[in-house]
Image (cartoon, rainbow, N blue to C red; front, side, top):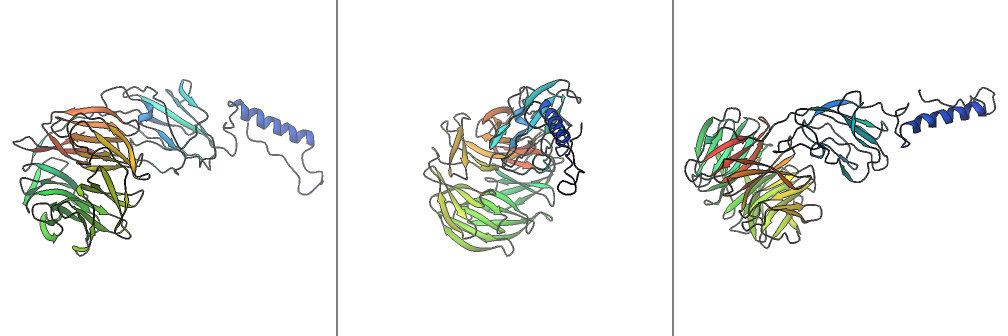
Amino acid sequence: MSQQTINTGARTNDNTGDTMRAAFDKVNDNFIELYAGGGDGLSVVDGYSSTVMTPFTATHRANGTPVASDYIYFDDNVQPTPMTPRQPARVSDNGSFRYRFQIATDSAFNTIIHDDRLVSGDVTMMPNLTLAFSTTYYLRVLGNTNLVRSFTFPLTVRTPVRGSTTNVGNDPRAIAWAPSSDRIYIANRSGNSITVVRPDTGAVVTTLATSLNPRSICYSPSNDRIYHTAEGATVVRVINPNTNTLVGSITVGSTPRGICYCPSNDRLYVANQGANSVSVINPATDTVLTTISATSVSNDIIYCPTTDRIIYASGGSVLREIDPTTNTVVTTSSGLGANVEGRMTYCPINNRLYCGGPSGGTGLIVYNPVTHALAATITMGSTAIEGTAYCPTTNRIYVSPSNGSQVQLVNPLTGSIVANVTGFSSPKALCYVPSTDNVWASDDTAGTDTVSPIS
């Protein structure tokens, strides 16, 4: 039945509208159909959305059975946008509208395996509903067309497996990807070199001799350049990815380690451990604009997009935050329980920073940049964590414990380790490469060091 609208006439008491009996018959009929859907006000009638029904296939890169909460969750405070395949889908209700969603094993929804009618809260995750590998499921959402939308997507099962290795220089400590040339750049700390690799084939394009002890590396999109720190030479070197040549050298503070790009002001930030300072570089001119006096600078530095802050690791088990609009240190975190000694990565799904912890069983440090506090610590064993990376298509944090002989995958929604990729000697750097949709990992073998993709 379509929704019945009461005819109220063209003007008051013109005898063209519905009688009281006819009007209330329509009201009753509308409510009968509305409540026939379960009494929650979400049946499909005119003015409400039709059933949104698109098949999706469960995927899970862990060594176990996939569950629905790995793939879909609902954020009431974020307007939905189309999602990349294998990312979680989102549904928004603006905090004021209840909706209903169902999962079935058939397109006709004769066999419904999940039915939730009263979803609410800031972030509502689906339950750990067991899904089978290589199986198509169907999701539908019922609700107000103005407030509720759904995004569904096909998913392909893909177990994390280490691919073929590529030999690089000695002690590979950092990896960056240049989209303009589709090349990955590996900073070989003890080898004093940068290895350039094609991610589609794994072939070495060239090896660049560079300044002493390259430690960290990043890509600057505004001028299409690769920048790496050289902690033994007090400089940042500049690489043109289109010619794979060194085209510049910028003097910074002593023992420069971490480097990151800030898109909000088009600047590069360099953490100078030996000088307890942060150098701010203008990539348009490759000059240092200012030097920020910073307390107890440690290894890594990162840009957080949700708070528009530059965050650097500091001694005393804290992180410190820089406002890029003023280039001043504005916030110091509460205690994290241990110093951040490895790489940091940002996860957009839960707005958290994942930071490498030291040896001794501290594990992976999870930082909330909104509250400036420790959110969790994920135990990863007694070895230090060298690298972290976020993969948007698997929604996993990839972690490389030094001397751990494996790369571990963490589900950011549950904080649990869901997979182990073995075969490494001492994994170090990690980097997600969109062109091949995998995470590249370096391995310090104390012999012939390598990089390899994790598919």
